[in-house]
Length: 106
Image (cartoon, rainbow, N blue to C red):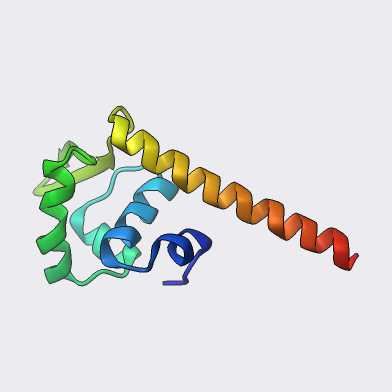
């Protein structure tokens, strides 16, 4: 997985990779297999840390498809709103810096 500006700022850890994936795809729901593959987190690590995200209401189960459970970022939670605000701020600041750099070099 390519390291992005969010992970450079907050640190490239498995939980931050999961949060990055959830915040990037806010409107999507994911199976545990999707999360492990797309976030680059091992299956055993995912099963160790994911229950904490559910317990703390960061992610919620939204539906079942066959035997698979699908989870989504809980955008109604006040803590998640702060995470999203931080994520958006980091990305916006990065874009501003890149735009200034492009203007200087142009």
